[in-house]
Image (cartoon, rainbow, N blue to C red):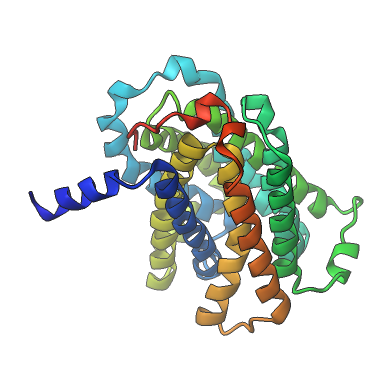
Length: 321
């Protein structure tokens, strides 16, 4: 047996939930890296143009895998939730996120969008998943930890949030849109291969984003970008769009949306660590304490009794990547 086949056989012996959680940890690191690479990209490309090119390249990379798995796709059964995912994840979320970032601070945006896992977890029963008191404790603990990481332990950041501020409201709307995307994915992953799903979302999303960015001349922007900006954009595509996107859907398919989204809380922790290493930003004590709280919350949530989950969540995940 060749090396790759031996490795595949060994991976197949690992429990599905373990593979899903390991993949979600890797996805969180990939998402966190986008904040580092994004600083380089947005120095030369507009936000809309960067989002459009990111979606377009990701769709092209995933297209061969989507074509290979087209026979296993039951588009008719997943048409409505897939359309919801395209609208929310492919168009509305990047638009709302960038609009919020233009009108309020990055800290406020990060803090409010961090409500996404809590919103998703609380609404998970709408798609047939149940949660327990232990799961609620875990999601709350992770939220507190993420807040500490983002605010650096300064409670004044919380008092600066105002319902009258358009940017804050947009950031809250982005969290709700992302939560809706997560809930839609729960029905889609049982009918469509993951690569097929992401290709449709990125492909249709980039068409809409390019149309919206037409006045900013996205083609001229990318042709005049430096090698550093293009390399950073490629890294964002490969890590946070392609890799993390696949691992996220695998997590939803394997352990359910409620347990999957809690890993979003670890993204600020990894972002703080990466910023310390690559950008020279200081790592403060409140961030360390917050990171520990996030990890504790994830442990509590993912260790919730399996019998509290619906039978659909407990089914063995098919290899649909």
